[in-house]
Image 1 (tube, rainbow, N blue to C red):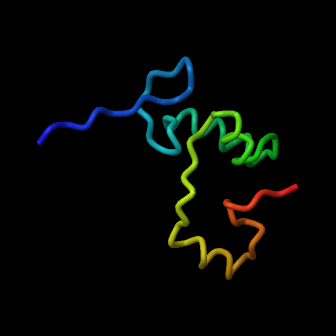
Image 2: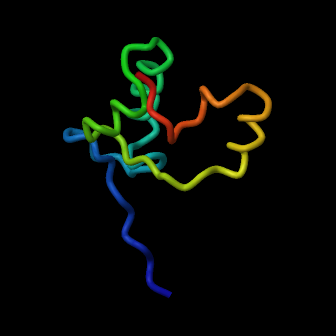
Length: 79
């Protein structure tokens, strides 16, 4: 069985292996913090090419929508 080549972080100057959304854990943490501080949204980060977003719905997404509402649905864009 051949080893699969590990993807590198999509951040230009980073050589760490990609883990989540196409970036390494360090770069993901920086982007996540900016999202939490409302400096950027995940959709804006994706549009700028900072992260790879999957459009596959998460199994937890329906449960979260029932608990906290549709505003956290990551596939819908906000104005």
